[in-house]
Length: 267
Image (cartoon, rainbow, N blue to C red):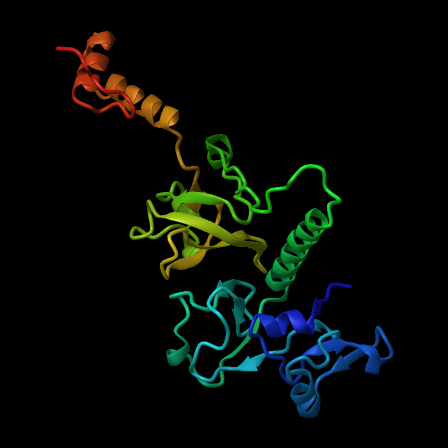
């Protein structure tokens, strides 16, 4: 059974609500307990019932204000798509007051598991159980050009670039990058499948600014290496010219500073 400790949720500033389902000692161990108002007041108190586990979030009413931290993934109404709470796609003040929302359980569970694994590694190092010092900063997953060309979905924590639409047929429901987003360096926060079977990713800008959205795989490109940029520039200098003198075309492009990473130092 997937579950999240109530104490950990409190640390993240997420309060329990009427209708949330928990398990704990008063429920006979693994017996489910649906929270009423009395239960909510008790479990939301600091340092009390932190050993209980939440297994399901209930819908919560909109109050007109952002209810949780900006990095918490949330669902609005019964939509399968999850957004960051501070996403510009959600204007809490403009939502109807009868619009419901709830924290996204899967995203929070994934974050809890990741933090727990990192803490376990840190504890083992501190106790001297590890011969090799571990780097607790998990490297960002690689997203290569080959993966991008094959329309593969980047994994969570991958950093990539928003791409121009390559297939207008995928543009329904706004799952492609909009013109103002093309070229942005973004980080993948969450990957999920919609109720219609489309694989989608929630992203935010990697520079910490308040931008984000949900797109399908065709909206993401790999960030080019210096070598890949140079090859693209060379290819362009060859195929964009009508001249048959390829060496001359390349030399002209180098002198003009059009080949990435290559500088002409001759006379």
